[in-house]
Length: 196
Image (cartoon, rainbow, N blue to C red; front, side, top):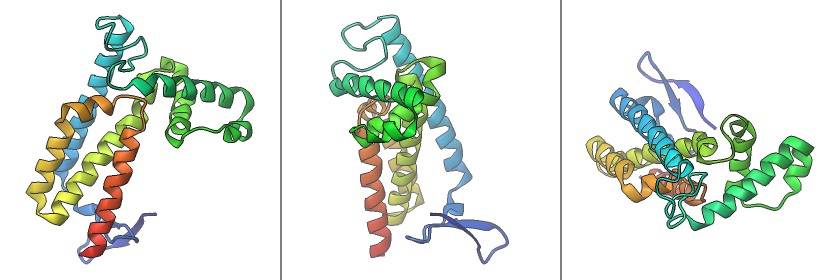
């Protein structure tokens, strides 16, 4: 839960009541870089989808953009999320909640139910959720670096993570890794803030 409070200066600051982190201190330079990273991530996801859709690398990506060699379980999770999205649209929320499924599949099924109507049940439909995970992870890495070292180190760490090829590739897929990484880094950030 975030609370809007008045800081000592005349500008408003968003402060997390649990850890005391001020989100007004997010520099505009970082916001610009997060926007650029977001555009880059959407472009990469679109390229991966088109590569799979047109079978340009048939042994590497399937027709939904799922990595067949590095995200093997992504195909299974895509089918489960697709079935759950169809179930949600057909029978409603209550029966959908009764389906036993991993949390990340449940979240992807919501994305499929909303965005999948326009683009189909593929990585493009999952992109809003994956983009959130990606940008939130970069933000948490920035805050970790800033808290442990300084602002420059936080920015440099976020840039390295944001451009790391395996992280970029996995963050476009329907696997649990992006959510797990975000949760783990968030826990590490909260622990770091509580220890300081």
